[in-house]
Image (tube, rainbow, N blue to C red; front, side, top):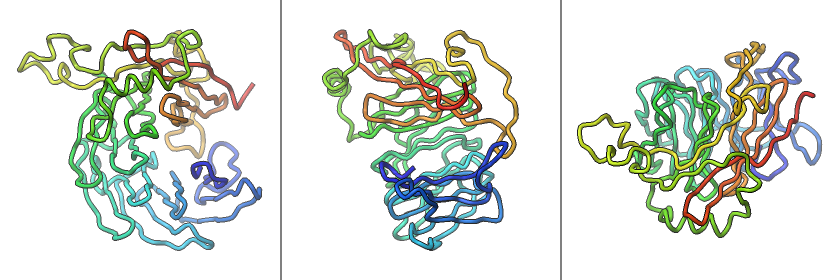
Length: 338
C-alpha cells in the first residue's frame, strides 16, 4: 500500500488466486478499478510502491519502474535466489539482495550508483529501510542477529541480538521517528530495540517522550513486558563487562518483548501450543505470511498474519513511573475465517 494514498499493489496467490501470480496489479481504491498492470515471465514475489516508483522482486531479479501510465522501466538488477521477495524502496535509494547470498545491493535512484554490503555469511531472511532512508536493518536465515547499516557510506552501525537459538525472522520494521526497531520471529515473539545512531534522542529523553506521549496504561494491556534499562548490564549484569567471555554476554538486546500468535489460535502463543501448517499452493514456501509488522505511530504497532484464519494484533509501548519501558498487546481481531 502506498502510505495513506488510495493505491494498493496486488499479486495473485493462494488456492484460488484472483490475479495471475506473474502480474502486479495497481488498484485505485478511490475509483475502484485497476490503473496499472505489469506482467512478467515468472512469479512475482514482492511489489513496493512510492509516489514516483514501483519496485518488483522476482526470484532472481528486481526491476524498478517509474510510476506512470503506462509504467516506464528504469532499471533491472540480478539477485541471488530471493523467495521471500526481499526489497526496500525509499525516496532516493532501493535495497535488495546481491548476487551472492548474504550480500545487499543499494542503488541510488537518481544516479544509478550501486553499493554492495557484505551483510551476513548466510542468505538474507529479512530487511527494512528506515522512513528517512538512512538506516538499513537486515537479518539472515540464522535469525540470531540483526545488523544495522548506514545507507550513505554502507558502514555497519550496530548489531542487535534477538536471541541465542536460531529462528526465522518474520518481519523487521523501523518506527516513524527512525528510533525504534520491531522484530518478529517464529519463536512467537515481538522484540523492540532502540536504534543506536547520532540522530536519536538519549535513552532518558526517549523514555520521557514515551511516558508523556503514550496514551496507554498497563491496565489495558495483556501481560506487558518491561525492562529496567537498554544497557547490556541489565541482561547479564557484571558478566557483560568481563573480557574474553562469548560475545553474547556483551551484545545489545531488546528492551522489551511480547508474545505474538502465529497460527490459527489467537491464544496459542500464550499457551505454547501450535497446529501443523498445511502447504498453500502458489505461496512461496507453502506458508501464509505471519508476523508482518506495521507501525501506526511511535508507540503503537500492529502485527498481521495471513492464512485461513487471518488476524491482526495491536501492541502499544508505554513508560512506567519507575522508568521501565514496556510493550504489550492491547487487542486483536480476525479479518478472515469464522
